[in-house]
Image (cartoon, rainbow, N blue to C red):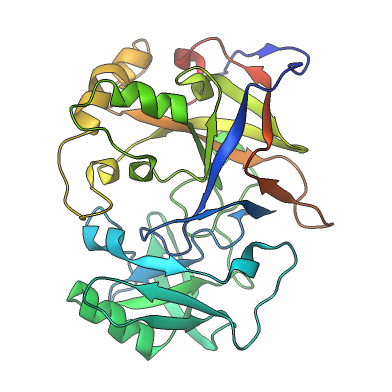
Length: 316
């Protein structure tokens, strides 16, 4: 990785943007939950990508191969997003999907261990949510499936140390947080025959009030009282082409993104890999394992502390 030059200056007097939405995705590749506030943890927002649906070999199912996961709705108790809340024996995650009975999964820690669980490059043990959940997802997907929970007591999953050494995630793809701006989505939608909603891109943090794609340049920001590092631009797979209301894939928005958000356009002097970019990956630089008050809220201001001058200078 080459050194990234950055302009360092005093914190901007005025906020560059503010948080307009926060999204949590409890089960990887299933529907997200829009929340007014979310507790920060060292691996991302609490409850984000804690669960994973796997096949009989323990490998992750994602929308890339099982787009029907887009239609799986997940509900958590409202109080689950309050700082310091702990589940009781009567606390459940509620899961719904077309043509299926409602599934209730206890938020209490399951006793069974599933070995040999893998997602991308990582493999390890996970907590197995049991036969009822397995039967539900098996019936829904039409193939043997199990629902597992990240085993935080026994496992860690480090992010790529080239970009952010010392940070860990649960079942996210790459990094603890993904930020995008409403203005970037609006700019993309100007070019599309049929506008797409933000759920195609599955961010954790949606901001507004900045220039389109300003987030590309942010290498250090402050949200409320917390410092975040902009780690790298988010390269997009086929998931944005999947309509999250129908689970049907098309060609857009990736076809249009390729015309103005590809590495060829944004990073012409770098190695070309045919990638397209939308959003900025973040890690939190603060110690999140101790103390209280570690919550991010809708309406929080975003201050840019450091930025690069062009997307070509940003890590990707």
